[in-house]
Length: 392
Image (cartoon, rainbow, N blue to C red; front, side, top):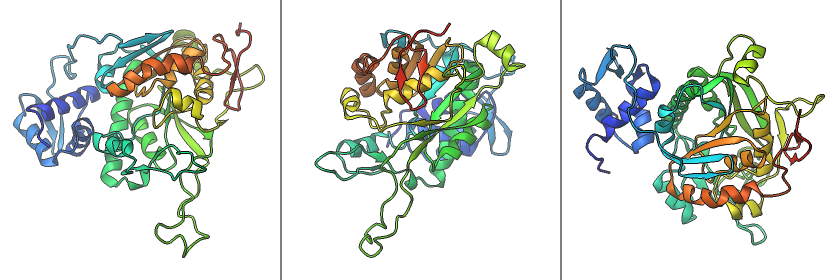
């Protein structure tokens, strides 16, 4: 693949600008791969060397940063802020690269983050997306039909190698670095993951400065795992290579609070989770069904989460029921639709024009899916949402 002149340099600048600190050649290479695709490590090293000291500074062996200005920080971007591509209810959707978008946002402008990200972007690369559309697999596992029904594809995270996991760590550390700046102190950050990679996700985000608070368990029967040995299922009929997955972890973090939680709540309106009722706190285990066929028809995205579960989450992440929820990997806009359904302001960012186009119809459709009261103030710990009188 031939890259346009300067694209590697610009990718390095974008990454180091978001970090506002130094990084190793390996970390920089991983970030460039995520942004522009496969590129040789030697090319990244050459660009660093050729543009030092004009643009980059070699801090010590194998570690670089952007050339410092008088203020001691990387020079910020002077780009004109984007306008929303689409608005519906209290939701705004931007078509943009989320890292570039986050770098332009004001500090302390987001109160919570709820997102289901592409894991290192491997499964959403053009090559893998083409295989998915053609149902030829690749990193996507295409489950066999059952009773004539086609089941949703699932990414095979077991095929990721050590380099992919290192790139994944860098991806989430970079995301965490940007979220540390735009979220308010005490802002909750919930990231959908899976049992094989949640530790990598948590490590990258925590190393960026976010405070790891545990995990939310979505109890749901998936089609991951449970398979007999490949090409030997008749020989070993009583063996499963890996247990059938019956849960989905959501990594739970927050930006550290300022002072006591009570002080943070008074100033920033966040720092904890909204209680379901006076005698019932928000729980970290949520029962959930797989996404229904009706919802998938409205929003045919390969990683679509059910509205009942998302509404439960968005009700809980804003303890004072005030503020803005961000989904930096908005996809078809299901998180924004859930926020709309319960009367919460939200912002989404999606880079793929196909999913942006889908979101324009999916957000209003999913917002009104099922029996929903726009002033929802009570939500069940079963992952369902029910309307009731507003909280005082």
